[in-house]
Length: 341
Image (cartoon, rainbow, N blue to C red):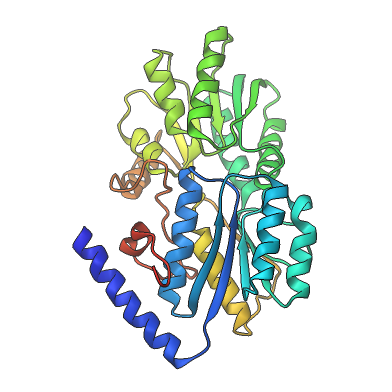
């Protein structure tokens, strides 16, 4: 594996050097406010890999830390001061960073929001369809619950637009199943350890429940149920490698993974470069549609078996690339190296 990664990096480096010699190259700024989360780490690695594979990026200026909207506002203004050509941003709070995004556009910087929408009209958005993500998973879950019972609703981060959009989709599905009730609602902050402790604390209350919907924090929820010897209930999560593996192997577990590729970060780089090269999209917003893989039918089991990739980190989505939007290899995204690294 290491030899393959080294060869891939060498080839990518040679291609990048040739491309840089042939035409204009850019500096791209990156702003992300969640660190230590597998999905976000894959997003950063996809950004690096696509920047390298494109041959059009001379440098990445990455602000990648755990912070809030105020901290992200500061990071964005630092990127503006650094005179980057484009900014790829995963917004902590659309309203909280709107002013900085407008300032970036005014300074001639292309702004592309990934994963979540922003309210600044000059920014471009490429995102997984978060509302549909939640609706697909919630509807499947409520059906598996027999249309009744108590669901544990484990959300993402309060104020994040992805969480707000998913909440709309979840509640849209909930309207179709009036006998399903939310018995516990909690924000996990998309943090694995926190989510696991939250479900263990809830189990300790003795409140009955018959299904769990998670906002992509999933394999640790299965771990919590098995370790506490709690009866397994249907669970919905994302296409994270660990959860996909559990859906294939854990006896008695009924569940579904809804695709939500962290590789959307690489797609954001591609979109930014297209705009910089004068190829603006027809629409300001581009959505990547999710699919649902479940383990209660033969067709669903086949999908999960095909998607499984135990070589990836358990917290990484197995959807490591997006057709027509990313061009790097698996070795390149796993290496997590950008231009000059």
